[in-house]
Image (cartoon, rainbow, N blue to C red):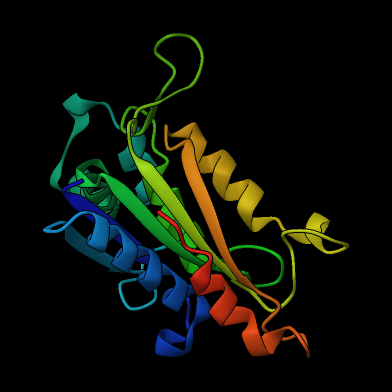
Length: 199
């Protein structure tokens, strides 16, 4: 493993449980792979714009219609996809907000799921183009969603597995810090989540 891409999306910075869990995963990967390079992408401080008409027009423009305007509109997408292409492992910090992922993470996803770049219909059916990479999801939540009565309300993990798998990132391992708002659970939630990391 040469390159680890760490993507964080929590608005809570150093106080974020998903960020701390992502940091632990990266630290373990570095222990197992001395000399690995870490690329950090903070989606809160380095925002990706929500898609507008100019972005979509640039994404679908044929090569012969390439202009400075389309290149500018596609620049965020190109940057994000290049980082993914270079990475051997990808660690994504995911706080659960209102049962799903933060809008900052969704905006990044909208820039990386791109026809002819990360997936193709050339064979007649969809094929993901980002293959041979390992993904770790560092999910943190106030409730417990991995099991029990709240499991059906977790739209974050199923969505991420589906959309990342669509672009070829199907080798996904999930670690969680959960129950941080539940008395009797919150006291040890972060400790247990960090201790669960095995890579």
